[in-house]
Amino acid sequence: MLIRVYGDPKPQGSKNASIRGGRVVLYEASKLLPEWRETCVMTCRAALLHNKYSTFLGPVSVTMTFFMRPAKSNKRLYPNMAPDLDKLCRAVNDSLEISGILSNDAQVVVLLAYKLFADEKEPPGVEIEIVSL
Image (tube, rainbow, N blue to C red; front, top):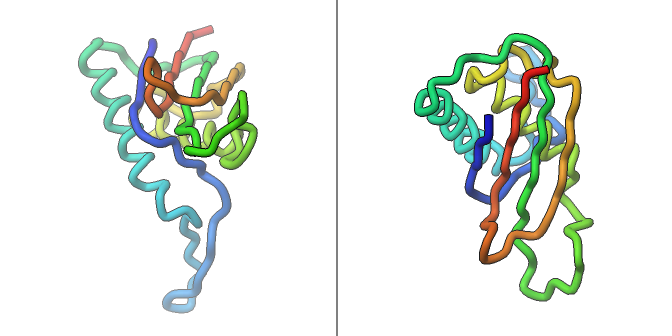
């Protein structure tokens, strides 16, 4: 299964905590994550319906290629700066589970991830390839 999600990838990183009604409540530190996650989830659900796929139940290999928007003053060959690649992957893995593509993101036993600059051919986003093992 191959899925392309368009938009600026956001990391799923640390959580913040607050006390409400005497209970500790955890929430994502990144205010931009919910919009990116919703974009990923909706795109994944559409891919499931459109291509008539079913939920992966066994072990899978996932390859993620992130296309990051370069800064206007960019002189780098690779986007070797924030956000961290592992945090980008965490957000997408959770989206795969929420969307129903995976029954549990623990099914991912092989994970390949790349972070490249977006350009005219490849706009910002992530390409996700899932293969059942």
